[in-house]
Image (cartoon, rainbow, N blue to C red; front, side, top):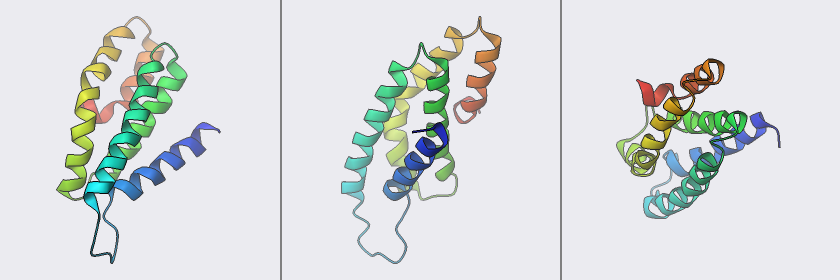
Length: 119
């Protein structure tokens, strides 16, 4: 699957799990939280394994940014769901910067896609 299709697929999954459902009284947040946790664990595992492959690494970081962009104007519960999982990835993402300091081109690309975590 090409990288744009992969991003769109992941954005759709995150939207279904994170964003409130319109005109539905039972949002099933507990079940959605469990599913999102499993989904993100798999995604973060792929991110961690891609550390030596910058092209894949950037792809996974872009997927994370897409998910965070969804949350800019969303409910606090959606933000809590994301943060409870993503907070564990922050040290890893910070270490990426020091790992790629000697590679300016790769570092710029990674920094651009880590904009949420760097602001």
